[in-house]
Length: 194
Ligand code: 5GP
Image: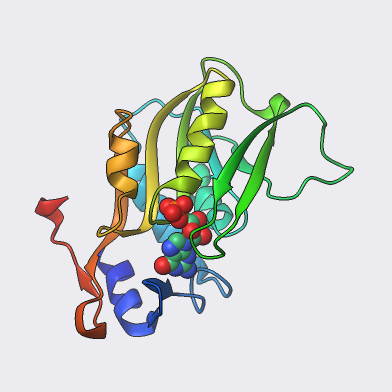
């Protein structure tokens, strides 16, 4: 997605540990027009696939999942990282290792909101090693729902996330794939090499 790549080049910053900081338009401050276009692009890519619901993970996945959900006209469910008294105790749970924070945390989805036989589209902001997405796939499996695809805003193609998800036979669509941060420059993968 060209406008996303241009924005990453303009406003993204490479941090130590192969982290891309995009908090001026994705992770802290959010650009609504870009987010809306991202949602439309996910719709374009998955419109011929049966999608009954979108599943994401708080916090940064929510905005993009919501924009996609608008176009698909389906509900958006997000896995919670913290459970509170207002959350049902009847939940599916999975453990996820955080790439950026370097610790394990538990994600929870109320059993009320995903059901057997539903076709889910998983959406997240970044794909690195794939742990967040695999945690969501694990929850989908517990619910006996089907993961029809995974949509990612920014994939770091030099990390094994795509391979880990593809090995489960799940389609992955990323709107910008970074090939490397060589010489402190953001290099994108060309579309055909996906
Ligand atoms: P994974 O679970 O695929 O290893 O990492 C994906 C998760 O870690 C995303 O949900 C995202 O929050 C975070 N993440 C991984 N790499 C980056 C990065 O380079 N920049 C930012 N901002 N977040 C990242």
